[in-house]
Length: 88
Image (cartoon, rainbow, N blue to C red):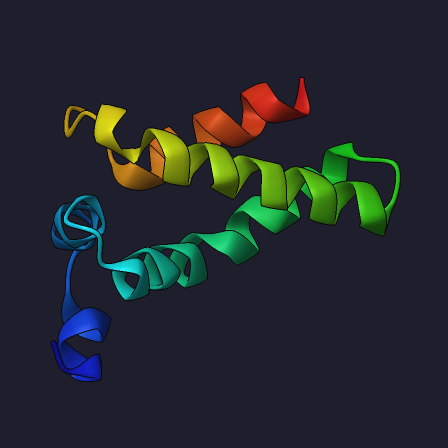
């Protein structure tokens, strides 16, 4: 795939590509959601280091469980739920 194809791909397509083993697609999902999740975690964590650890842990869980993503909710909502549960 060309870079522009990743940029314009919707979340569902990037998830499909990630499930097929395309790590670049997952990188685009990470880039799309990491700042919003970082801000969420910053408001609730004690330090920058804690925030970064929680962010990393969240996206490791997303990566390992992406096959469990259900299109019944948006990908962003799913990631937010994982981040919130990781924070707790």
